[in-house]
Amino acid sequence: MKTIDFADSKPSSTNIRLFTTDHPDIPVPNKERIQFLDILRGIAILFILVANIHYLSGEYFIPEAQKALMKTASLDYVMEILSFIFVDGKFYSVFSILFGIGFALQYQRMNKDDKVFVPFFRKRMLGLLIIGSVHLFLIWLGDILTLYALVGFTLIWFRNFSDKRLLLWTGILLLMPVVHWLAMYLTDNFYPGYFYRLHDELASTATTEIADGQKITRFSIRDYMAISGIHELLEVNLLMPLRRLGGILWEGRLFKVLALFLLGIWAGRQILERNILSNTALLKKTFLWGMVIGLPMNLLRTWVEFGHFSGELWPLAEFALNALALTPMAVAYCAAVAIVVTRCPQWLGWFVPVGRTALSNYLFQSLICIFIFYGVGLGYGGTLGYSTVLMVAIVLFGWQIIFSTFWLKYFRFGPVEWLWRQLTYGKRVKLLKPLKTNHAM
Image (cartoon, rainbow, N blue to C red; front, side):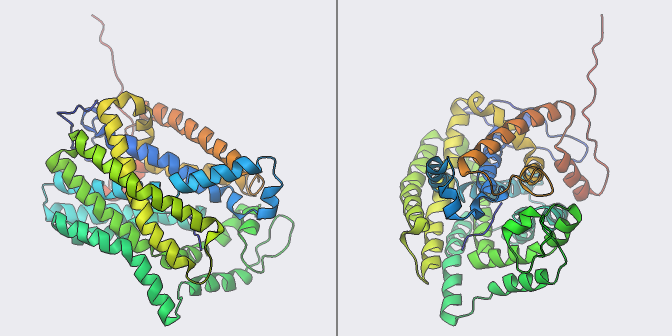
């Protein structure tokens, strides 16, 4: 079962500035930002869109017989396989690792002062929970922010774990989806299904109508995407988190996200204490081993996913391969980006503006795709092949580069980042950059 998910200063090999400021009235100075993290975050936002548009466009829900009749059918199939091998699951993993790195940097920046950091971080997660809940309940069920916020609260318990304990817990948690599914299988208690059934029962009593006036008697993604009235769409959206919760529990997503957060904390410490971003030899080894382990496992995972394995134990194979395939390749991607940034940062510099406004761009992607593909907008959902919707994703991301670059010329933060800061600090935060004045002689 698949669920939706979802100082532009140039670092040198000898000196990479690692700290940022996060005072509500002081923007993060360009010269003190970690360009690597901004670039990696921007790249993750691009490929999260590539993965999510598979679902946001409705392409995933098109019947196979209908897909086969499309003019782009052959190309669509090839692109879908390539996306599954190299993109699916890897970049939400990268994003999760970045979340953990951010936690480590913030904790270090506050001098590991629990009296200051703990209330700050709890307010930060509460702000993210509010933003994520709006996205989940009103916009799109594939939201990841709500889950990040809820799991993020638990990171406070791990802040003083040793590096060894962090890695041990990471390994255990990555394997927990397999253990969790086996426990459900052996006890014959697949409890996540309750939330799907509850959603369907509640949805069947709603009076929501789709475009042709027919009532929704049982939940269907295609019917859902065809809803043409904003009020009706919002009404259905309020029930969507039940399905999202069922999917998260089914695949053990809580374990995976927490594991990647802890891996990110460990990585953040290595950046701070050992300056691993300058250790090209170590980065190359990390990339090599990540690909040596991850690529074969992803090829096998693709072979299993695309119809070469079936039966009641299919989820067990899927979850086991996910544990062995996704994280190693995600780590390899992180190492590859670090190598490029260390040697030729200008090559990837155009990802920086998107990375600095990642939260805003993530939410904008949902809104724009809903306008393009849903019945409340242009209604192209379920009509385009995968290669076509990939082109839409690339064009959309190109627009986000332009928008983010322009926005940051005049504003200190992205619009949603600005809102998040205000929710965190409980006070008004200046958004506009100070005007530059030229003094004539």
